[in-house]
Amino acid sequence: MKWIDPEAAQQCRQAMLNEKEYDDMSLIFDMFGDSTRLKIMNVLFTHELCVSDIAGLLEMSTSAVSHQLASLKKTKLVRTRKIGKSVYYSMADEHIENIWRMAYEHIHE
Image 1 (cartoon, one colour):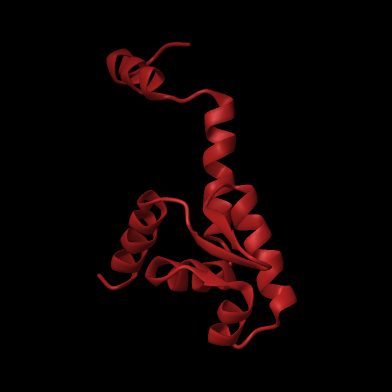
Image 2 (image 1 turned 30 degrees about the vertical axis):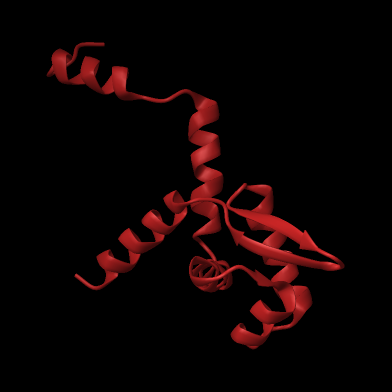
């Protein structure tokens, strides 16, 4: 292939990720593609909560919230902590909150 700007193409090639990295990133961005998951993330940025408290805040069934939390946990965006029979959910780290906040700021520009 004849490149118009071979130096730029080479720089782009060096910056490219491997396929697994693209797949893993895609899964994270999928989690941001559902408004219910965004609501759950938003409350978990503030405080660790159990399913029933999240469901109450969002005025949703515990089943619906549990389903979304399972997806968030599968992608390692939330972590759990068990106290007796109760399971508490929290965000895994601040990286996801940074992505969330950047998206929020972007829609308000």
